[in-house]
Picture 1: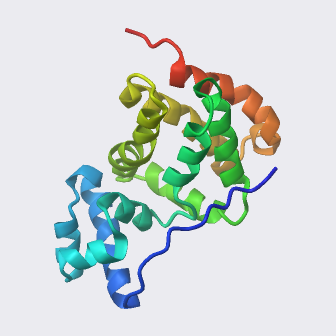
Picture 2: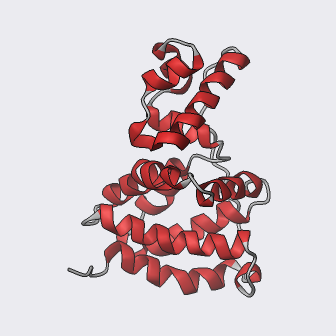
Length: 201
């Protein structure tokens, strides 16, 4: 299986202390009030810098959110490239295969596992509910052209998060040692149904 190692988005050079202060303030704000309640102005004030400097170093609030999560890859780029670039009827297979390629890469696992543990801890729910879903997953559903992405993508996330938790965090067999092709065969049809199948109501 080929590892997924997309090029990282280059960040503008700057004072390490200033950049660290901005990221620390951003993590605290996102954890306390979620994505929707966090503003660039509030992050800048907490870091003791001007809001323009936050934009200069990190770009948009979406970019700052993902930088604060310290992910080894940008999921917007990885998933959009895999899921949106092909036939919509095969998107579920491409999505599951891409998730597994990223997660099975030993260089990626420590940061990804730390992120999921943070989400599952008390107070971590805004990172997924108010951040990752509206910033990463729902826009991918919109780009894919599916109806009701605000419902379909959380359904999809519930399935993928369950796989991640059992395979990589709790290490439940046989999921933990199954090869990628077997897992794709098992999960892709369910994920595809969440993407394009009929919805209740």
